[in-house]
Image (cartoon, rainbow, N blue to C red):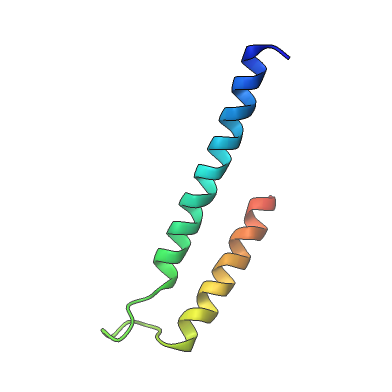
Length: 63
């Protein structure tokens, strides 16, 4: 292996982790809803929506 291949492997690993963190942060942010301030969902439904959003994101990453 030459230096270029090693750098490419490291950049792919780093990029993948960064992308996953960004996707998870975005899904967590949008799945929280507005809460008690008149948002569309609150309480237990927030957890259900967050769980489904995470499941959907896992499936979409496989594609």
